[in-house]
Structures are given as structure tokens and as C-alpha cells.
Length: 296
Image 1 (tube, one colour):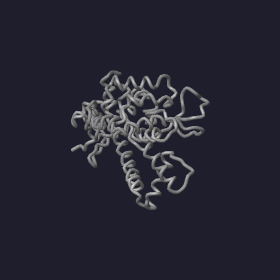
Image 2 (cartoon, rainbow, N blue to C red; image 1 turned 90 degrees about the vertical axis):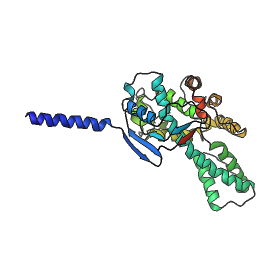
Image 3 (cartoon, rainbow, N blue to C red; image 1 turned 30 degrees about the horizontal axis):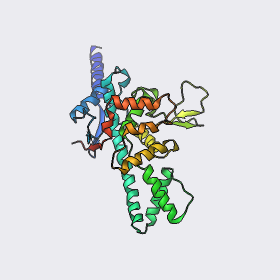
Image 4 (cartoon, rainbow, N blue to C red; image 1 turned 30 degrees about the vertical axis):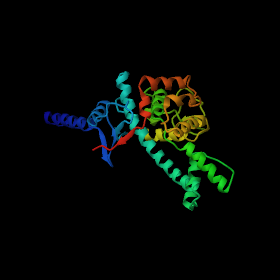
């Protein structure tokens, strides 16, 4: 009987040590973290010298968390926890921005051909139509006029998002990653879907006609919100302001563009809350030409 108990205790010991290890994968110059505690995430950040996020031309390691840390809601609220939240989201936002920048480069290449009076290929025109549909750029015109209008609209809509706004918004909407939506739906931005049973049901409204959209990872939530900011009519003025920054070779600063987030959400004083978070946590530097670097 004693022997059985000893074996049982050993099994518990080894099981607890197995599950204490973070679940991660290293590939293609990046670390993908499936599951980890807050302490394990911090240890990983220290290993790759990712302590500071407030640097102009900052370089940040490709450490991508799928979920918030397993014990996140047990960690006391303080500025150190908030700094960890920022560092968790920053590489994910930059990863999404890299994909957007690649799409923009494709459109810029087509635009260069068009402005140099070069004939666009069938593939070029197909790409324009696909991107116009994705980014909600619409015109009834045809021929060259259509091509010119689509290019103009796409160059306004397809562009990187200020990391400061993406991170500060997520902090505001999820109470720094502790909300039920993050835990159960990976949702960082309160995205809603209407007249469907798919998604997470609001707890405060039994008869709600909407659900909160669910995502497979934090990155997918960021990706969806980035597309919304780059396509939805509520962000028209934001995109125009961003385009003006690009025209004078300046990065799109969150502090300057927050004023255009009036319709971002129906939360009271959302603009002020996002702006305060950007200033208080020094997030403006994350907008100034940040770069992801491979982990070795």
C-alpha cells in the first residue's frame, strides 16, 4: 500500500513539473508560445533582452503568445503587470503590421506601373479587385478611371496601424487583458456579430441580438481589428490623418490620431482613455519605426 502511495506521489510530482514548463515552439526565427505562466513569459522576455518597449527605432524579438498567461487574472494589478501586457501585445501588433505593409507594397508596385503608363496585367487588375473588396474601396466607374480610383482608395486604406493605439485600445476594452472576453474568446476589441448564436453571449443582456466574436488567438483578434480600422467607415478620418502623416514622411502617431476614434466604441470617453494610456505608459515611441528581429 505504501509503495502504491509513493508511486502516486511521484506521478503527481512529475506531472506538475511537466505542466509547469511553458508550451512553446521555435521556428522561422520566432518563438510561438501556446501556454505559459506570467513568470515564464517574463523569463522568456529577459532571455531575449525584451525589457524596454519605449525606444525610437526599437527592435523587438519575435515572441508571439497565442493566449494571455495562464495565471494572468491572479497577478495583482500594477504598472509592472501592465508593462508585461504591453510587451505581450507589441510583437503581435508588429507581426500584423508586417503583413499589412506587404499588401501595401504590392499596391504601390501596381501604382508605380500605372503612373508610368505601363500596362497592367490581368493579375494586377485581379489583385486590385480583391483588395478593393477586402478593404471596402468602392466605385461604379469602369476602365482607367476605375483603376485610378481603386489605387487611390487602397493606398489610403492599406497601411500600418500605430502600435500605441492598438495596444492602448486593447488595454481599455479588456481591463488589461483580464476580461472574460479575452479568457474565453481571445477578443481584445469588443468586436460584435449580430443576429446569430455564434460567439460569446453578453452576460448583462439576456435578450441581446448580438454576440461577441470569438477568435482562435490574440493575433487573430488584432488582425481583425486592424482590418476594421483600415476599412470601416467609422475610421475614415483616422485613415485620412494617417495618410497626411505619410505624405510628410512621418510615422502615424497614436497621440495625434486618437481624436479620430470618436466612433471606435460606445464606451464613455474612449478617446480620452486611450490617449491617457498612450501618454502614461510612454507608448508613443512604439509608433516610431519599430522593427521585429529574429530570435537566435
